[in-house]
Image (cartoon, rainbow, N blue to C red; front, side):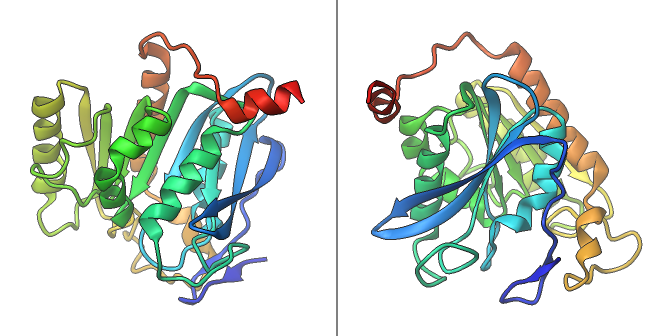
Length: 264
């Protein structure tokens, strides 16, 4: 059953039966407020590479990215999504502390059992790309990501160098200055960090990378989730797969909280 949000968007519950071995409810604290997230683990055994999602703007709960969970679990990735403050099962009032809340969610996600901490990827969209760039050092202290995907990127050449990780940019061809947030941004990042930087421009899409060839999107119609740009999503999956295969050797960090729980 689609769940309407405060904006009137219909958010269908993702269909993860047969692809998820577990859908785990996670509660975590952010500045004294209890927030809710969900870790979806793919079928199979052993730790799974993690994709952590940082939302676009607006009062978006976890199911705003249910379509991404559907796609990535089929490819063997675990996905962590969360309800923004004041949405879904998260407490508090919407409109506060989004950058802090995203970082708190990341710290909770990487501590979950079943996650391969040698293969943690961050997928940030729109305003989320700015939140990540502003706080990247904090994310890296918690767990350096193997790579960062910037969907609907808002970072131009003068702001992208702070992300000290390989990046993949995916933007719509409808952006006012496509080159500034795609090719130029990727080239600047590579020059500043000496790390791999790539980009993909999705044709015939709106800002959040949904296909508008058949007309404008009706966000109150739950079928909008089926109109993601297939080329854009495939470029994301191909990039994740490649980094996962060729990344440098990694020794998983020991989380003191997990270690204490294991000994208890």
